[in-house]
Length: 158
Image (cartoon, rainbow, N blue to C red; front, side):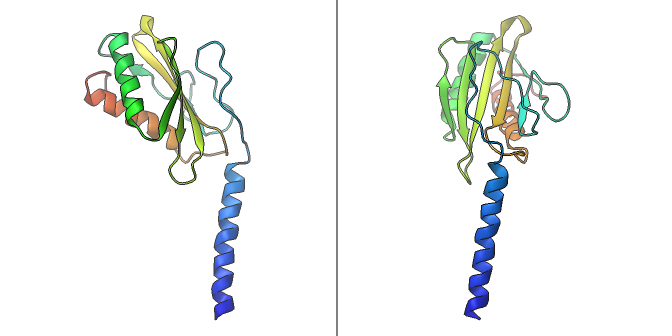
């Protein structure tokens, strides 16, 4: 019986190991973004961007109901309130890059925003650095942010 229990434990460890290998199969670093515009999504389905078309990667930009400066301030405050997000770059006032850590395994996702005053919107992107699938985490992250900003009257809810 002791041997049987040890065998189950080894199966669990093996299963976790296989999951980590599958998730880390496409490891990358953060975006090397010199243009201060959103990075394109890779071919893998672990990214959403308002600059992408289609159901896999596409997500609507944040349509603003206040001026861009007020919306940008509210966005930054909302991101800084989230313990899982660290703002990396926000020097220009119209482009922001952040890193979000997942709770379970601590994977790093890259999150980007670009203010587009002429369109009265803030474009957004969230992408996993590793793995093929994010199980919808990046889309949920940005939609949750949209909902929080809509509740504040900053963006138009969808």
